[in-house]
Length: 166
Length: 104
Image (cartoon, rainbow over all chains, first blue to last red):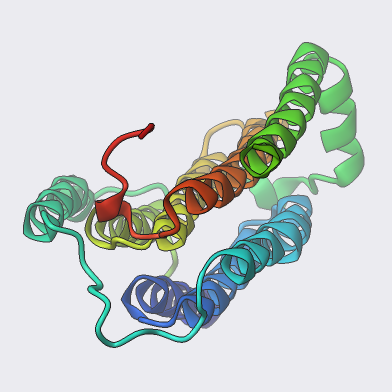
C-alpha cells in the first residue's frame, strides 16, 4: 500500500512536470496522459474504483484524444527551437505559484495529528450504492449536468464551425 | 510508515502548484488547457482523499462530487479546444502573447 502510493505519486509528479516542461506539444500531451493514469491508480488505492474507471474513460479516452486532434488541426507538432517557451510575465507567475505552494504546505507539515484511520475497511462501497445515491437525492444535479453537457456540445460545435463559415 | 490524509493533501498541493506554474508561465494555448486539467485533477484527488479518511464515508459524497467535477471538466475541455480552433483560424497563431484582443 505504502510502496504503491509512493510509486503512483512519483509517476504523477513526473508526468505533470514533463507536461509543463517539454517543448514538443505532442510529447507534453502524452506525459499528461501518464499523469491521468497515475491518478487513476491513486483513486483505486483510495477505494474509489468507479471514479478510476471514469478517469480512464473520460480523461485518457476522450480528453487526451481531443487535445491531440486540436494540436493536429492547429500548428506544427515539432518543437520550433526559435519559438519562445515562456510568456512575458513568467517570473511573476512562478513567484505567485511558489508562494501559494508554501501557503498550502506549511499548515500540512506543521500539523502533527493526522487522520490515518479509515472507516472504509468496515464496508465495501459498490457501484450499485453509487448509482442508487445518484438517482435518489441527487437527481436534480444529474439533470443539470445533462443539460450542461448538451449545452457545451452545441456551444463547442458552434464555436468551432462559425469561424470557417465566414 | 502508514499513508495518512496529509500525504494525499501534500501530493495534491504539489500537483496543483505544478499546474498553476504551467498555466501562468507557458505561452502555448493548448499547454495552458492541459495545465487547467492538471489543476482540476489535483482538486479531484483532494475530494476523494477527504472522503476516504473522513468520518462518514458511507454517504459517498466524495465520488459523487468527483463525478460531477469530471463531467464539468470534460465540457470545459471540449469547449476550450473548440475556442482554440476558432482563435487559430482568426489569428493564425497559438501563441497567447500575440492574441491581445478579441476582435480586429
